[in-house]
Length: 42
Image (cartoon, rainbow, N blue to C red; front, side, top):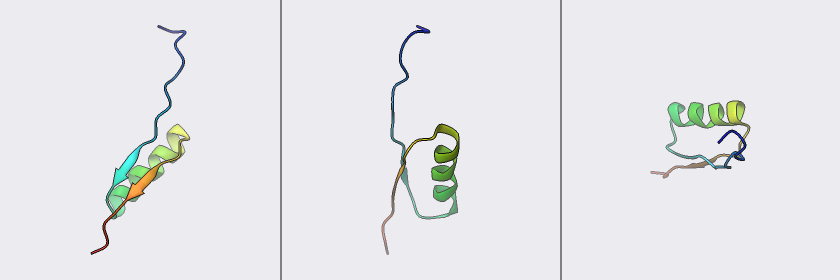
């Protein structure tokens, strides 16, 4: 199991408040992955 390659993933964050921003930033800084954020304008 140690020799298995890491699986790549792309986190998707739903929301437009500070919590969504913080979560997206955390993924970016810790996992070094590109993230997608989606929000509804209303």
